[in-house]
Length: 121
Image 1 (cartoon, rainbow, N blue to C red):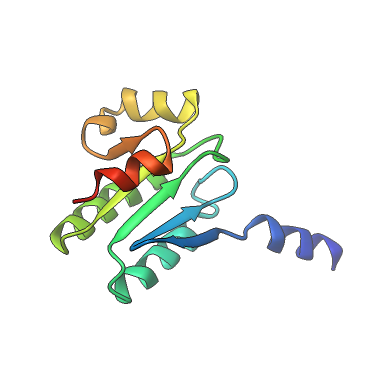
Image 2 (cartoon, rainbow, N blue to C red):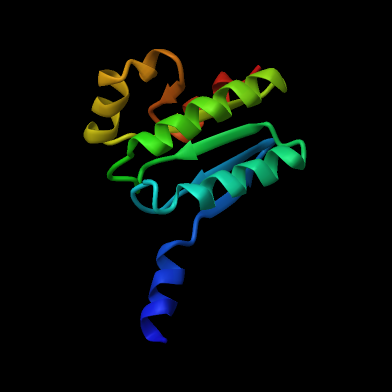
């Protein structure tokens, strides 16, 4: 039972409100293994008409292709609803992944939460 408690704590995604924005901290790498949890959380927020979402990746060491697909899907969906998903705090590995896939030119990427917040109209 102790290992399932540890797994449950590790899979906990942090979320906080900052003004009109919801800031999500995945707390670890985002891969196909935990992508569904992130997707469910963001879709719940969108269902509650929260369309200003910041994905704070300061604790995220890696992203895989499943997450990149999710980010593109969410980017389009939020854009159609007048909102946006903004990504902050990327480490060198995650930034290189977005650069090599050219998604850095599609997604909204910022150095930190404050910069992302200032970018909203």
